[in-house]
Image 1 (cartoon, rainbow, N blue to C red):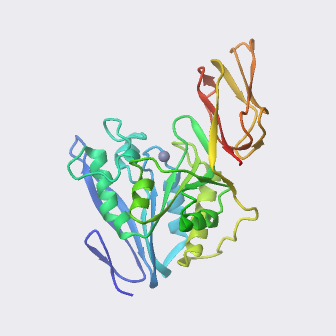
Image 2 (image 1 turned 90 degrees about the horizontal axis):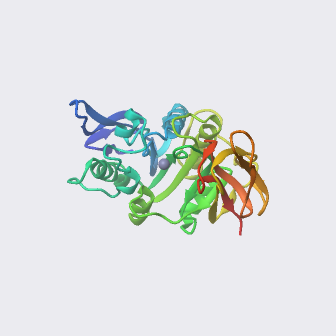
Image 3 (image 1 turned 60 degrees about the horizontal axis):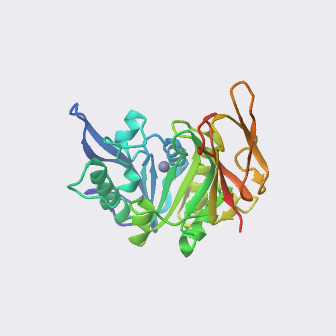
Length: 318
Ligand SMILES: [Zn+2]
């Protein structure tokens, strides 16, 4: 197969190569680059990108991408994989979701070459990665003090996204509209198929999330006809994913200490108890009840809550 050109570098058929994309300097003068792994297959096929740590502290995707790469051989691959384990290199080195100036990379797409750092990094990623790809899988984790059930999000009204979302085989598939400035929004508008994986907590390699993410990515490669997998190809999931089109947060009715009485993936019914909030002494307890029926797709891991804090996130059923 013909060479693949990535960021001006030629990648030969059936090879894997690391390419550095310069992303700017720290005030110390240190140059930061995106380390990109490009696997160019032996046969023709789609170009797929894998991106992690767009939110710099959501590192679960870094480990998922590492384990996926370990399972791949370019000589068996049809198509090309562009893997970017750490997109927000600035947030990653400081353990932050954001870039300097608290700018959210995932609100900065498509970006510009003259804007602030987040905007420039967004532009670099669009120009060098998204625009040369057909399909993307973007890996995230819960933000702040939250943990998420491994899940796929995407615009399920888009036929290819729907097919890929189900093939991934995460326990939950969530239809969600795109927010302006997100990678998902901009990629869709550029005609790409994109799914977003969410799972686990920030700053942790949540094992369940990593395992589902790795299996799902390998299943996606099979569903896309790309192959490339060394060893056992994962079967489709035993249980079909739950499909949800709306979500709702259960919020704290008072401040206090929150005790969770449910867990990720649990089925809850409207009015059912999901926890308690009380004073540290245990006095003044009040029950926390689900306001809709569905599956627990995320929850706070911080027991100290103020009135109105988001506690339990429920993926609702129609
Ligand atoms: Zn995120």
